[in-house]
Image 1: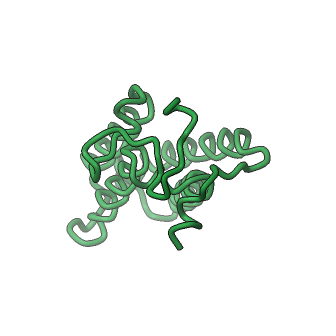
Image 2 (image 1 turned 60 degrees about the vertical axis):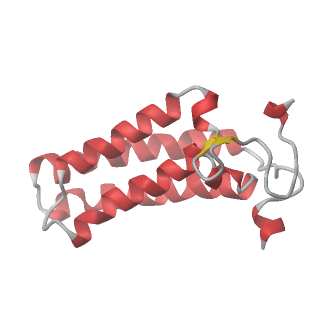
Length: 144
């Protein structure tokens, strides 16, 4: 399991850049449509497809990163996704309807982490430092 998650060499995915660009674009469309739920308490039928777009495109983007190299999960850029999912799932357990504050928090986390310098994005809260080397000991090009 560990060697699959943390391969000795980063896996290459044909057309990864374009898959990522298309997925991010669909994700932004989905997040925009979800504003109806979070900000204006619209009926589920008016924003449900946007939720599906958001979840599916988010899954594709995450799967691309994890398949390439699971180190992404240990770095802040991957950990932030987990935090956002936890925040957004609180509406299932604690709130009877989508909450605008949580929606904005998720957007803020996304904006800050995705545009932060590498020293922040590649920081691991689990290791307390920037990590560019997987647990299997492989070196990443950014380490050199």
